[in-house]
Image (cartoon, rainbow, N blue to C red; front, top):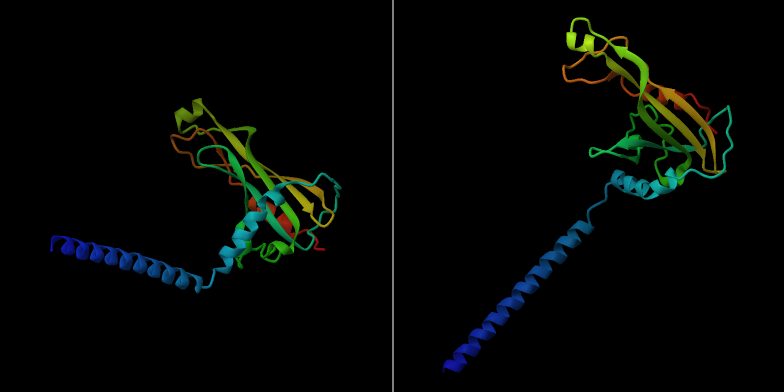
Length: 206
């Protein structure tokens, strides 16, 4: 009797485990099926495709055919350098192509297949050689703040050649006055994004 009772209990445990496994598998398959049926976000798909092409876009061609009459061939992808929180920097893709209200919207490629021009923007802050002085704050009057500006090098690549066709330096303007915090060690203005945008918008299209 004891043996029969043990075998029946064991069979019940095995059956219970099998039911649990089948239930988990069924639930997982059902969840996978429901996720598969959801439509993918077109913007996320576009971002993923552009990101996969970033190393190719960032690599400048060996051929250089500089012209004083730069242009935008077809549609463009816009790359720029971004400072990382922990130090250093990385090249990233400007996602303005996802924003229909961007003033550069008409220039952006919406898919990698449309890209015929690469815009590579590399910016850094440099000392302008000038200083900010505030006679009302003795600590700044005795230790003037270096006035920093942004210098950006814009490189245009015509991928249909492929070749670097133009380089342009654009720098930020230095404000006459700035608001200074007590802990501030330098001063200056914002990056020249407006000037860069105006430059790109003013280029003829081909």
